[in-house]
Length: 264
Image (cartoon, rainbow, N blue to C red; front, side):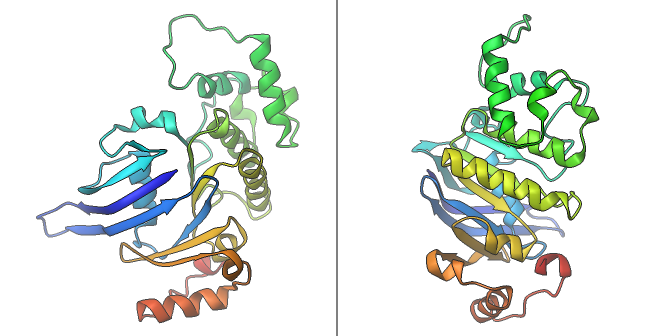
């Protein structure tokens, strides 16, 4: 479903602050793979996710989604293949619009839009059905402004918006990092239910090693712009934070950061 080949990216090339962020990264995700992506600051994980999203184009390499070469497509043109949830709950929705209006924008993504604005009852039935998955009662609040929602409710709504059209690839960019410790696990659990329900191919960037181990069927660790670990199956199921740190040290020849955010 997603194929990344020999991806390289350098910021500010030829200047004193040149930064080679991705070094020949290659990665293949089968349909339904749920990959957690972890690494220290500057490892390249967010740059890799943003390259897939089209936020910026790679210097060299190729990105294909479901057999379509999207390497040189602009961000808005490849959005038809992707769903994305950002770290900031405020980024994925419009505060001054209602819940149903936000959902309508997501539902009509990729379609031609005119001046006419009309939400059908058939659409409302669909929106209520999708929102009921959250178990937050939002299906009964379609007319409420999104700005009235809590950060967790808003991020949960953004998950529904990002998956409303069942995208080829779902990108979760540290989407629980800005939430409080009680809300973050709930949003993770909601995301897992949605991903499982629709069999979505997913990449989740996280700084939390425990979340990286618990979520998904595959764990990838990056260091210095390269993939250094790719763990799946029974090996991932049996993994502990201590194991992960030891594996990183073994393959990279350096000690993993003791940053508490990374350890969870």
